[in-house]
Length: 218
Ligand code: ATP
Image 1 (cartoon, rainbow, N blue to C red):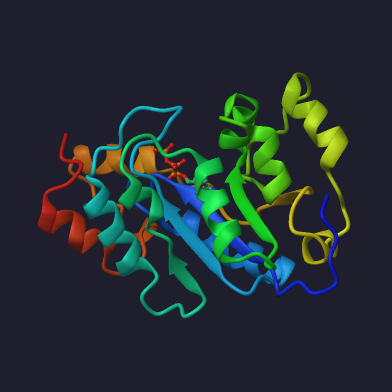
Image 2 (image 1 turned 90 degrees about the vertical axis):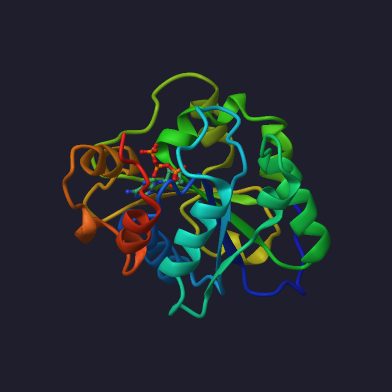
């Protein structure tokens, strides 16, 4: 863990496919930003996820939906480096790039519990923990793994002390229990394919974009 006294306010990084971005993502970002006093939330849409099937929408369409969703939120931004890099989106490469650009800013990488379950298979996961903190967003109805490498990582790095995110560049894990109802992109895509309107689960403008682009019809 690198400790420094000249750090700026931490920022959150929220990576994912965002296929499409939905209110669960936005609510999570807002809740975590407030709870840990984070200066900004940077959404990082991937080009091609490493551990899951290809998204249905193109990177450009997913980016457009993200931009639409956060347009009135000045502390929410988009980092396009994974889209520009093309190919498989390795989080460690993104973090190395951001660490170069922001040498004095603690980086707090948000990931949902489903993503955390596979974290020990991520490319150079130990380096990820060296470069950033992790905030595990516990979605309602999920529970932490009780065995395996991720359990060991939690025993080693988990802290209840929120100030840890402000006084070092990385190296701590915080588990955050979300208060929101569970929303999933998979369920939203399924509703659209069935001809239903899941507009209330999507940020303003995103459903209109999906309809115009004829996305997720099958
Ligand atoms: P899918 O249903 O296709 O798996 P997803 O929304 O879970 O979609 P991503 O868009 O890749 O998948 O999610 C980005 C990140 O947001 C992941 O870390 C995921 O765990 C987390 N996440 C997804 N939905 C929610 C939610 N409702 N609340 C909190 N975090 C979420």
